Length: 326
Image (cartoon, rainbow, N blue to C red):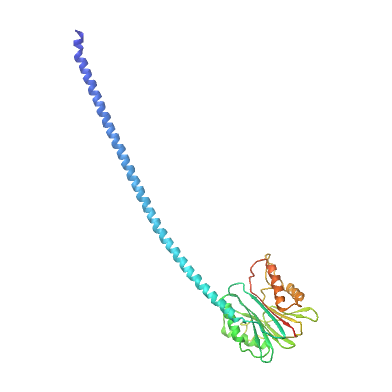
């Protein structure tokens, strides 16, 4: 019976196959377990890496936040200091501007024989230009026009000293007044600051004038409809201690016009850098000399503003126009 002979062998093979399958299953299970452990370990490592990355980024964020808060605080502090400094400067400029305005006449002299008009425009908050009038007991009138070097508080100081020196002015020759005033300014000694100034004594029929480094004085003569440009040499006040000044005398008759000015108008530059020019000014004065004092100023300012074409003039503009009407 051959089948009975092969049964033990078949059984053995069957058992071996079962054992092999069992072992393979165990091996697979072990491999799966190992693979699972490897996956878990990898996931754990990735989690740790993510945690470390998070901690690092959190640390960087904290550092950046601290630095940002510090820089913001510093910026705010600088801004606060800047605002305080800006407020201080504005207060100083306001005080200086108020001082400058207080040094100018509150109104022009009212006289039956003279038509007087004035104009002043500062290029900055505080300019260095100055004009004034000093009536005398003998009926004459001293008309003053000046230009301090620079702008701001320092020029305001120079104008203050000049104003103080001119107060209580005696009815003496304009060139002598300039000599005395020069010694006062020199004695105060404001360093490199100087004051250019001209003084015209206006009497009934005559003009006596002297200048310390000011632009020309213009005199329109109604009888001939001509303009004389009166240029006088001399250093500004505060230069040489013993500086002397020349004096000119001209007649002043009905219809004649006296024009004192700073250099801001004739030296006003246009967009091309070209100056308005003294010759242009002289011709315009000649063309408008028949007008009233205020109308002459209006004509001159309109002309220079057209020349500037909306630009801001780099220097102060001051005009003092006196017309003889009787």
